[in-house]
Length: 173
Image (cartoon, rainbow, N blue to C red; front, side):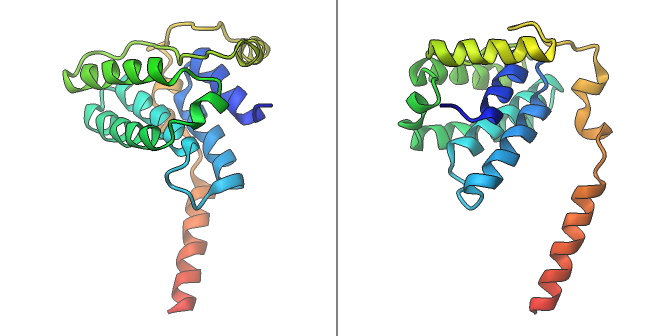
């Protein structure tokens, strides 16, 4: 009914609050199913994860830009939220509050996505538990590996992929 990656995304979003992992999970899924569609609901959720990651790190400019892009996608994809088991009206309110907090440069606070489908909620909680996370646990600001994950990750595959794309472009010129 729901993609495995989406359920894992929800487990991380509400459990260990690893927003970087949320981004990675959905980006991989989006690339497999709809990579040319930059207005995909999956891109909106990816951007929401990135915004939340930036906000927790007090990168208010990055948080604001990515959240505004997510909101724009969500406005154009309103019909998709029912399929994803999320309450669009509640999400709109949450995102409006988040944007206001970011604009005022308020400290990040953990929040939950408004899951309205009881089956999805059960699946996400089960996945969270299987990962060893507590559902709706607060973000751990002391976990530097979590807060600064983008700085600590192995980027060798990303760098190699970029080099290959550059070589392809040079060959096409």
